[in-house]
Length: 356
Ligand code: NAD
Image 1 (tube, protein in one colour):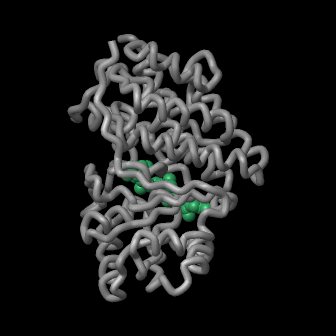
Image 2 (cartoon, rainbow, N blue to C red):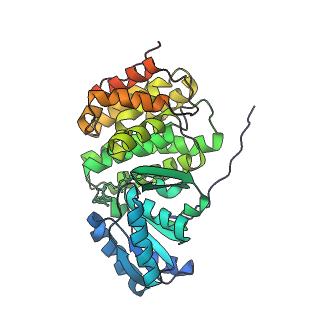
Image 3 (cartoon, rainbow, N blue to C red):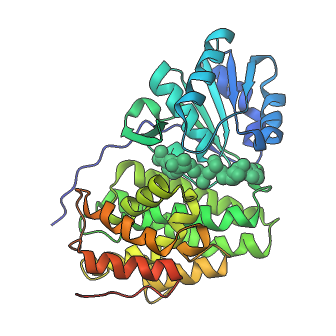
């Protein structure tokens, strides 16, 4: 019998190639007139495009957004916003920039318009994260959901293959954990399966034909649906593993997801048999874990922890950290199985299940 609860987040989305050219009317429509643009230093060019369309609605540009939202950056941006009298922020870029916009919404109540240009999906979640004294604190609060998300696939044409592959796998992870689960939610699954299908079908096409706007558009849409499923769904072992490697060993975010996803899916395969099969069906493969690894190889994403700065000794530390965490997971968390999984991920081997 069907049994579920579902509360969507306060999403407000515009999706179209060239959508950013209409940003001025959209910002005015929300009642804002003093926008502070946020970006990383590397994304100044896209920020200039947005600025040219916003015209005199801009009061400034903060181009120092950084990965994992350091508190110092939040303070700097928030001082600038105050000094300039900004009534909203417009964040253009990947999850790092979206994260800064969210932090300013959380800390300073500053409304945010997000223009995502990677597949991180953060703009669709109510999850915020701020790094203080070397530790990333995260939480959920609906105030960080952007007042408007503008998806313009044309702005992703410059995203290089080295970012497309891992970022696409990062999005895939958000959807997969909400289908290959022991507690599926029918509404969340709808979006997650849509995301899995679109990403698996179109990610390789972006790598082989970088100018393929249709493929870029579909993966951007898939990442939005993946973010929406993470925003209203759950996480389990996979996200704990990524948090462990990212937090303790500073591994790059999207690459860490790309490497670990096949292994965390294999770990939970038995307890999530129906969900794992649904993931495989959506991807058009026979086994979800193997299919995800094959996709990673096809799009040139890394598949081994040893290739992103992890040493063999780190595996022992990571196992210890995960064993010390308290979280729900479909399969029991045991030291032997964790070690087996992480060693496979370390060497970049095919995912297998150690039943010990
Ligand atoms: P990122 O924002 O650092 O972007 C990755 C790279 O892509 C950067 O080098 C950036 O300059 C480049 N880039 C972005 N747009 C580009 C474009 N159009 N053309 C060329 N290059 C471009 O990283 P990310 O992977 O997008 O996001 C990771 C961060 O997001 C992490 O801090 C992670 O914790 C956070 N995140 C948060 C959530 C959430 O729900 N809160 C979800 C996913 C990720």
